[in-house]
Length: 86
Image (cartoon, rainbow, N blue to C red):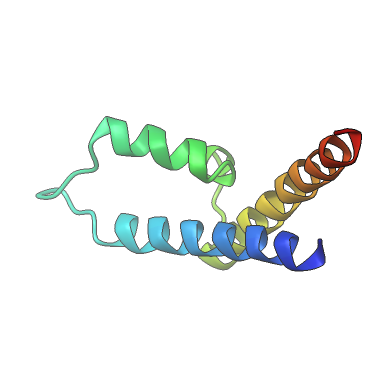
């Protein structure tokens, strides 16, 4: 189970890293479409806080990895309980 939670955290790290690279390339000539902004806020929940307060990219990546690890812990725990029940 630890390995699956680590995979969840790794995915969170990669998601936040990809969004950071994408937003770093955005300029006035190449604006961010609203649908991608919404998708970023859904897949990277710390981005909602970052819209109101300055947060470094390192903290965003770390907090997103921790958030995904927490979600992974919940999902894997429920998955194990459901698997044992059947």
